[in-house]
Length: 115
Image (cartoon, rainbow, N blue to C red; front, side, top):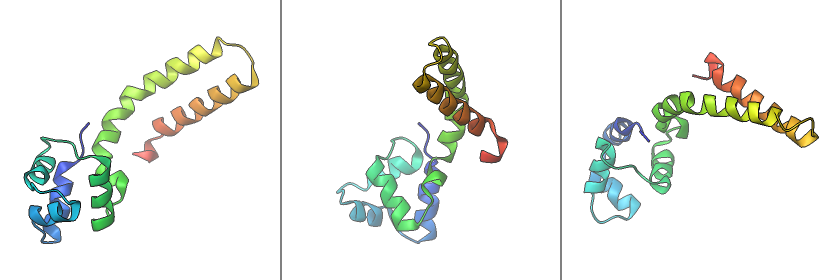
């Protein structure tokens, strides 16, 4: 997973905060972890990302934008494969709803306006 680490640093710098400031808010003793997250050497956990979101008012999707763009081409073929598999199961109402859901997701994910 690639979080836009440079965004973590960018927002911290814009607020004129130090890595030690961030570490204190996160209650971690070693601010070198903040450096590793900012350099992309380590992935921050959900609590850290939510803290950045709350502290800097960063839309959570902004933090994950690069990962979203990289993941989309991976899951599109999986969705198509699942639709094809479900079509082999017959006309059961639940199967039809599942196909409709996946078809809707596929359309939404291939729509360029969602980039």
